[in-house]
Length: 95
Length: 462
Image (tube, rainbow over all chains, first blue to last red; front, side, top):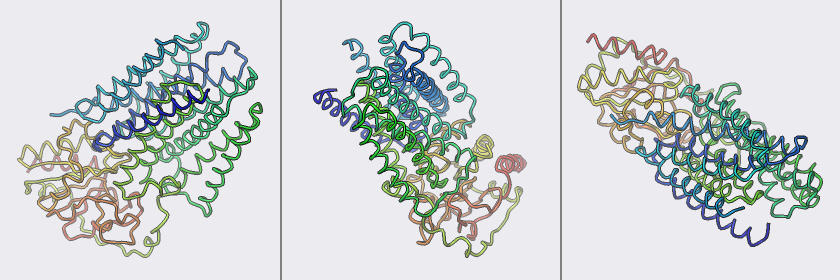
């Protein structure tokens, strides 16, 4: 990675963090649990990294198996996370 | 990486941001989650397009296995278990980040025998360190909430020092790793150290602080994903990871304020029951007034305003449906019924709301502590169901109490308070509750679900 691309990625990190801070500030405690579950699902974005890591043709290589393990784990995180959050939010009804 | 892929990642990032924003309002929350999932789908699709066709089969198999496990857990689990499930999923994500960083490291240094640059090397180390701590930390949180490990704070002397030393050693190992980039042993040691550190940091934390821990670990898993993004030079990983990392920290901060603890205290690990343990054994037994279901029903019959305070006990007894029956019955009798929700009631903030929503109680009846706290003085009856520390007036009056300073619900200001619990057992903080001995407080002992069901049938007869 060049220094230039690193700097740009750093900018992205800073800006994304700021957005993250701002988004959460006004959320009522009622929604904290679904929010934690929902943001947990987003943290499963690691799945993207896992797919890339699987992109190895040699089945004997350690990196391939690490990648596939990561993929199963990350998928549980993503699918389970979104499903659980949806299940919770389905119930929020106003009469 | 082609322009199209980058644009897809950008769209995914935007959808995550919009999704989180929508998650913050009750009306749009469910849609927000769906928007965010579309973003995730786009990101996954854009990535799958980039890989070799042959590996698609492996990827598909892994995804199917993971989805099956995820869906099974998500739909089978009881709503009371939500906090530990979030911890479980979170832990898996952390481990995945660790594995991905290690995989890329292994691929480049061992299989391709390349030298990786310093920035990538540092990113690998950070990803491994945070990912490992997140994994074992989340697992410990999961087991504690599950009851498999004691919920008590497990402390031993010198543990802060040990944690600090471990952290310094980890940093040291990282330096070694970066100087000997072709030797994988350092990264592996780092992984092992991070797993141990995760356990040691969460073990000393007692039950009441678990929600804060889970929120913090949630944030860590985002940071781990972000670090992995630097390793793989992948924008969507960095953005989504940073979003989750930052929002997680703020949420943790909000929860700390609600419990009157500082975030620094939290970050040092080993918070919880560190001070103020002294008063327990020398406290005199509190004299309480007991009441039976029939008498309680008569009290319910005589009032015109009621506030129900749910706590973790209600969740354990699965009494939320019975409570709904009770509240509907009271409303038919023209009693004004509201629910007072303390920010840390239950295992996680908002947990009570989820449980009551599951019981079909309209969310506009659920009022937050700050809004409702002044109303207790004008309320005829408060019904405390399985809540303990959040209604303990010692938090306001007794500087020696471990919960001193924590904002609580002013239930003792109401005309009458009926508390239903199984026994005189202590709450999370492990202390006696002065409320129970107050003149206007009556104890209704028994399992919450059975008691309330009986209460409902008694009330119907009146």
